[in-house]
Image (cartoon, rainbow, N blue to C red; front, side, top):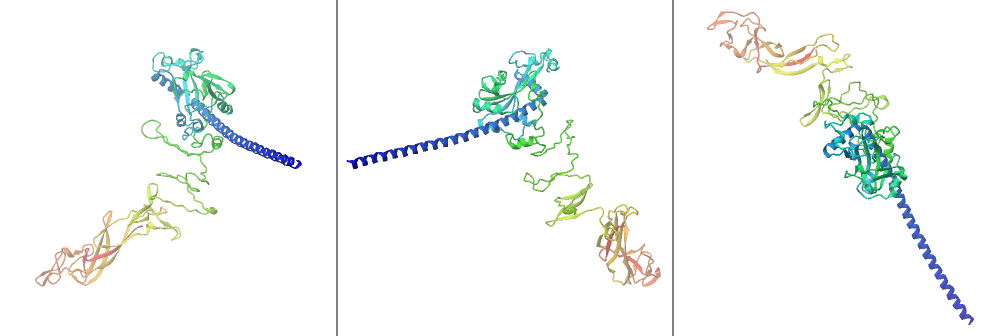
Length: 534
């Protein structure tokens, strides 16, 4: 009996141990699942927190941009509202963020940002004309008849004279979000609570904008005619109020965040944008655009960079080339000295890829295709070598050397007015040397002479031969032409100042005791002609 009782006790204890283990396992799984859920919830909360921080940062930038836009373009906005009243009856209108970007108060690349991504909402700046003397809340939107009671086509002077006692047209404006998904009031309150800009607001109840912890409330129903009018779950931050002007600083003005678009292309919710805004660095291209100031069809204002002492080459990646400075212009003018220095102050390498290089309107070096090969053609007014003859001016050297036929013409070269030192005049010169010659009648030639005849802008190359006959009286100033002369059977020339015959008997002897002179033509004479300036 005792043995059976012990077995029964053992079974009961074993079953209890198994039950305890199952209970512990179930508790462990519950704890693990709870921990996983907690971690997931914590991650989600952290993501939501980061999203709210980024929305707040973005909203700050856009509110400030809207206030800068209104402050600096206040008169233009007044006129826009007047035009809106003229066409629609009421002085109320919307400015998109593209309008702010076009005016230079937001990056041109901005396209919706964090609010659009997170909630699908878009921003818009709503503005309406109100009369400062209107004591109602909200003040009524001014219509065209209110602004131009005398139907003069202009805003009544009394509304813009700065005297509120006779009425004053002022702008009430709010930056709103519209469309998309409704933002929970808790999330919205967290966003506007983190904003640095004052009077950030949210629409928790219809037609009412409230600040963080309801530090202000504003009836915004005066804007309800606009399609961008915010419903519940959207932002509505105050930009300007009647009697107060543009909000955001003690003076009621707000400086432009980025009037030169230095930060264009940088996400306004990023750390880079904050760094850009707080520095004097430019994160994008600088574009200088000429414009026509007097509307005559010709750009007469040409912007320039002045008082610049250095252009430092980029040492990181960018839209240009690393360690290169590119000038991309049809014409680049340098009015001062150009010094290219390489390592250790030695002259560096200057590479030019162009169709030509000109100085003072003249092409000094040009690139020319010759038989399919690009070649550099030097076309200098003067070319000197410092190490030759104390500075040899090659314009005094032979500029042309060629073989030409007798009686051919050669153009004179264009020469500098004086030598390079200015001491002596320079003129075209030609040097002619006989190269080949023969007598067309086969007579013995005892002498030859070549020279150039001055024709004004050209020279004519002439060649004289002296033959071993003395039939005539002549010299190089009055030579005979073979082609235009007839001959007797004995070889004597007919005509001219030459010996005459009756039959074969000398009639009148006209020899002069020297060889007869004949001028050669192209088929019977050639000379080497060298031209230069000297």
